[in-house]
Image (tube, rainbow, N blue to C red; front, side, top):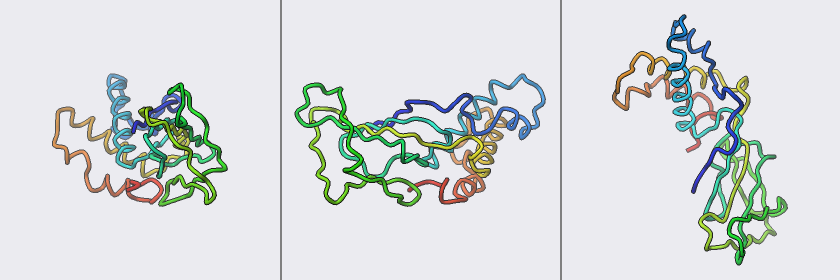
Length: 193
């Protein structure tokens, strides 16, 4: 169902600094600083969506109608994962109970984390009148210093494209083969299809 950013990355929340982008663009003046900053944000979001990753440490809430399988973003700090639910018959559909870690485990699977019930566990019944009786909270992403160079280069490529082409463009023009190859460069940061 809904994946919501609960705690944004620490300010400025960018994998590439304004100074790095301006150097890449050969821009020495401050006239376009606001534009370039917005283009860095747009480029970063485009890369995160393509890779199905949160690049910078941020807190997330994932509301679901049923028990989870694969967690939706990577990389996830497994120690921060909390699974909560609204039990069947609950009087208050806004109060979640925390699912005991003894009932499930998080397993590495294709570079991500998969939720699995332990062998002896019995899944609690969920309240079916609630829109999203399961809530998973977690922290995803890494510190800015640990974002791979290929990801930063991809963001800079998109920023350069946006900066040079300020008018509308064909959808295919935003993702040249070199950009896709850069984002697919290693298993950890490529798409988790």
